[in-house]
Each structure stands twice: as C-alpha cells, then as structure tokens.
Length: 337
Image 1 (cartoon, rainbow, N blue to C red):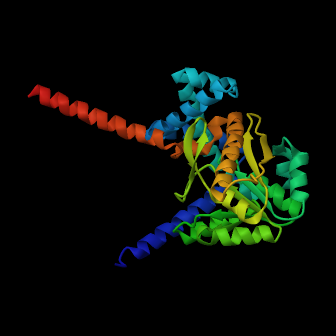
Image 2 (image 1 turned 30 degrees about the vertical axis):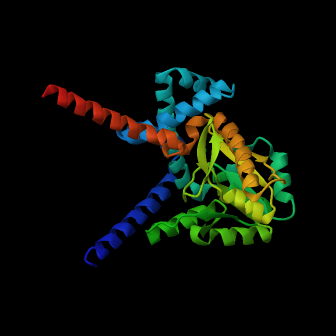
C-alpha cells in the first residue's frame, strides 16, 4: 500500500520546485521574449490537443455567432462567425492567450503598484473606487477572462485588506503552498471550498472584499441560465451569497490589448427585490449573464472557459456524432458481408 508513496512524495516536491524555479526565472526575463515563447507553446498546444481544440471551436463558434447577431462582435469575431478559417485563427489565439495567462501568473511576484499604474486601466475607475470606498462588504463576481486576478491588487491597495476568494485545494501540499503565496502576492486570501460559504459570508459581514468567479459550474450545483443564446449552468454561489448577506454584487471582467495594457470594468448588478428565493436567484443570474456577454465581447479569445464544458448541448453533440459514426460503420460492415 505504501511502496509508491515515497516516489510520489519526491515527484511532488520536484514538481513544486520546478514551478517555483520557473516563476523565479519568469520574473527575471524581459516580458517580450516570454510572451513570444508563450505564443509558440500555444501554437504547439493547439496542434497537439485535438479534443481541447474541438471544444474551444464549438464554444467560440456559438459565442461569435451570437455576438455577430446582436451587433456586439469585433471585426475578428464577426469574421469567425462566418468563416471557418477565421474561427480557426480565433481558436489559435485562445490557446496563445491561455499560455500567456500562466506566464503572467508566474510573474506575479514582481507585480506592484507601479506595474498596475502602467498596465491596468479601469474603464470606469470612478465607479469602482466609489464601490471600494463604500462602507460594508464588497462582493465582486468575475469570469475567467484575461488576467482576472489583477483587480484584487487594486482592491487590496484601496481597502488595506486582501480580497477573500474560494479555491480548490490541490493534492500536492508544496505546490498548494506556492499557489497560496502567489495568490496572496496578488491580493487574494484563499479559503477552502468546503468552508467557503461560512467564511465568505463572515468576511462580507466584517466589511471585507470577496471575489468569486461565476462563469463555470465547477461544483455541479449550477442553475441553467441563458448565456450567448443557450442554457448553461452558472455557479449559484455568488447569487446565494448576495441573497444571504444583502450585499449588491459588482460583475467585473479583465482583458488585454495588443499593447499589453489590461482593461478592466466592473458593473453593479442589483439583486432583484421581488419574487421567491428561487425566482430572485434566477433573475440575478440572468442579469449576471448579460454582463458576462458584454465582457466576453471585448475579447472572446481571452475567455479561458472556452476550453471547458459550458453548454450541455454542445458537450452532447460529439457523443451523438461518435454514435452516428459507429452506427454507420456497423451498417457498412453488415452490407459488406
């Protein structure tokens, strides 16, 4: 039972040290060659990860077609909505931005106030500052787009306290410790998912800032909400936390321009006052989804969720296609006898 344990422990330690060493190196190499390397690795990843590539393509096809139909698409997104080759280019960009995100995250130890002043711009800075300066708890709900942790540094600097966020605990203790240190450097205080509900509620009641990501149903308890024209299970946690505490959520997004500047925006999404508990949660999630759509419209290729299941019907489509192909092959074999 224990024969493999020492080997696993050594492997985990080596992996954690490799991650720390990579972060140390990333902090000392100029950003431009690092991002060029990230783009190269993203291209390689695109070519090798066929399942991931197909899922991203399905998801981005839905996103771009919806954006084009609602006149929210950029030129690149409009092209991707009608041209399969342009869609392939957008999927390639998604792989590149995914690797870029991890490279930037490795450089978190060098992110300071000077970095934020140069590279992060809030498009509605006055509104965000007013929200952070207001008395009481602050609840920010984001999505996996751009370098989505960056605004936490602004919140921490403005309020003098880190933003409290839930996080999965990974099996590797050394790597988990590194992730905790890195996120803390970005102004985040991580709490385990098992006790997140209680700790996040307590943080809001103490007047602290809480950050959540709501575009992926990681725990499996999501509520079907129309997103880009089709039902998708969105995490119910942000809505339930707002309902239980009375704190009005702000939905935020972050995306990167070609110049390297990150743009961020936060929009207040008031919680509905009327209806049953279920009706109010459902109505809030629909308003939250509208904000998500506006943020993704700015840079759909930077939405990291496209590599994961979003819409159940798109996940079922490949299964149905495999079944159809197997049926056709069986019929062909039968006809050949």
